[in-house]
Image (tube, rainbow, N blue to C red; front, top):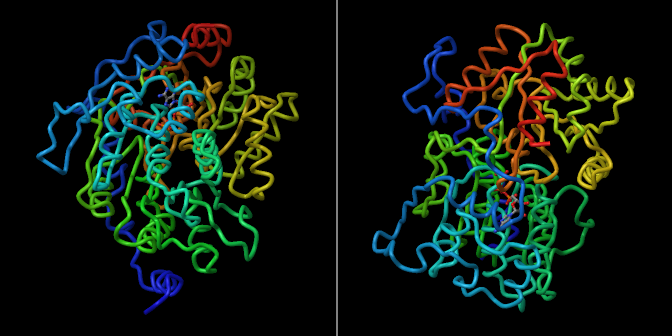
Length: 483
Ligand SMILES: Nc1ncnc2c1ncn2[C@@H]1O[C@H](COP(=O)(O)OP(=O)(O)OP(=O)(O)O)[C@@H](O)[C@H]1O
């Protein structure tokens, strides 16, 4: 009989990659670039900037807002499941019969009531026998807690080996998830949570934590080196699952990880976006899964005011950004540029012009990345310039502005407008019912069309603010942010 390590080796050699080339991308489904008419799946007309209704208030109020914003479609695999059953959706965490220490952990995080996705997903995630899940809800609505609770509820503290594995697309997100799970497990000292990202596990050390949160490359590497035995894994989670299964490289690694943990694990896929073609693949990845789905017109987070600025040229974009520095530092801001080189260039120029900021790209060493991220999280830096590397999942509540310095595009050679990445980028603000502002910089016909394609796809109308009247623009932004 082959050992688990042999199985891993075999998987690494034999598993075929997911259909990254045959699966049409999200952008493939965009309408023609030149059409001005909205698509028939347009959502409600966007609200005006000054109509921002969502208050940045206490958790209670925010929670109600989250719960009441949208209806979600729940597709149950088990058609016998009774939608009127009290377990179909829950109003309190107590109804889940979680262990006392886990409930204490939740309350210590001030999670007094479940959000809508938690309310719908948790009873399904925790039911027995375990069922796979494909869960979707808008950015910042509490998906992490849903899968964190699932992992913490299913592991046996007496077994000192990995029983739940959660994979994320970036080091920063894996660290954040590990932090959330650890905080939630604060009163469960017998449960260990291990980060599995570059340089987080010493060479030769054995991973004996019950829960492992990491990036797929490192997890595979640890399995291959026999530092981690995944034969007892009961829950396998992919956060940002559409990206994890569909992006070249990541998709292949995620599939190998899934095949390595074996057939019996409960597969849990979560994301704010599941483009249709990727959803079909997700259904193969997590067979017979219960599904919680959003309609296209529900994808946008209502608390985020989406603005745009008509810059004269590429170089004018920098001047406009520098002029906005005052409003960028009201709270915290993330500026997304397309390439690592432009991220570094923008950061260098801002610093030279006396505007403090930090830059994060995949080129930095892990320790540098951690340093940048913690200086942003602790507020010592208020402006972060980055690429798509942290477009997803990052939860820094003080971020109230996001700038798309360059519009998001799918990877080359297609390089088409990418509504999914757009949603994830702007979703770094407006977390859990808070107010946020996003600004798109447009500087020519092409970038205008890219933005319009995203507008049409999402059924939103972005509001133009002037580039030659900083005071007016500041006024609009401050009104939107209610400051
Ligand atoms: N039940 C709850 N009560 C209060 N706050 C909550 C609750 N659930 C989650 N939160 C908070 O909401 C914020 C957003 O949660 P989370 O990061 O899980 O969102 P997400 O849905 O995973 O977003 P994304 O799609 O961007 O990854 C976090 O700061 C989290 O602490």
